[in-house]
Structure formats: structure tokens, C-alpha cells
Length: 92
Image 1 (cartoon, rainbow, N blue to C red):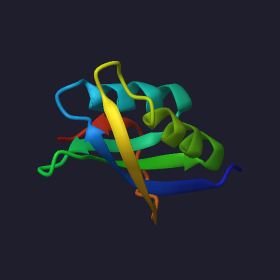
Image 2 (image 1 turned 90 degrees about the vertical axis):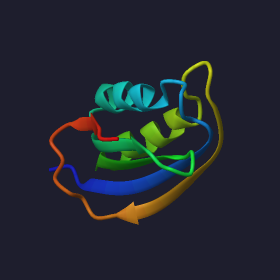
Image 3 (image 1 turned 30 degrees about the horizontal axis):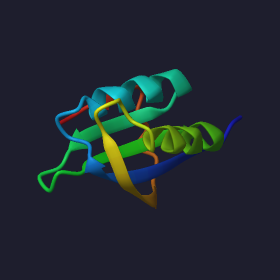
């Protein structure tokens, strides 16, 4: 059985108002990563990512690109506890 890991990320830069959350959701589903993504009041985007280690780290690498109008300046990562998410959702 594949070990499931979880990582919480906070993405900074021009990531709100540019379809960044939809980009994250599509990329997560493509990599079969579950969890959620939301806009934060400070202009960042926060996400909880769960899945096999390679898939989660691959998604974090994808997040550095983003959709055409975005500009990612930083991604903070923190090891988290898996929540048992069954899909990847935009929650706020």
C-alpha cells in the first residue's frame, strides 16, 4: 500500500483574481491528490494536499507555475496530518 502524506502550503504573489484556485484543483485532480484550496484575507492562497509523496511533491512543483496571469513569489510548506479527503475542493 502506498503511504499517504499531507502538506499544507501557503502561496504568495499574484494568486487571487487570476483563476489560481481552479488551476490548483485541476492540477491536483490530474495528479490524484486530494484536499482543498482557499483564498486567504491577506492575498495568499492556502491549500491542504494529501496523496502519495511523489504526487504531492509534483503538485507543489506545479504550483510554482500557475495560470498565465498569476505570479508566484513564494510557497511555504508545512508537514500536516492527513484528513482523509476523498477529492480536491475549492472551499473559499
